[in-house]
Image 1: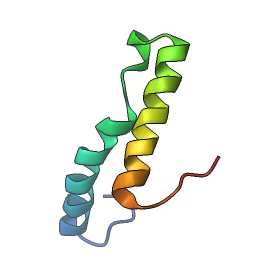
Image 2 (image 1 turned 45 degrees about the horizontal axis):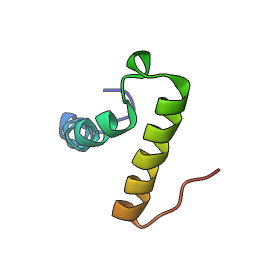
Image 3 (image 1 turned 30 degrees about the vertical axis):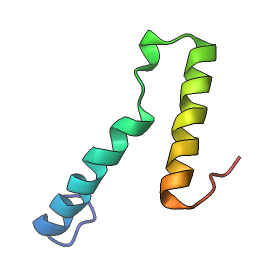
Length: 57
């Protein structure tokens, strides 16, 4: 429960995080470098569209 004020706060964070985390973990061991870069570029584009933000380059 590092740095969380309550078990409920930890649970709320983990609940949201569990849906977002897999989006940025494509299974790197199954992809070549070109496919990985293309896949991650697509994932960040999708993320930017959904959140309305831009990622740092």
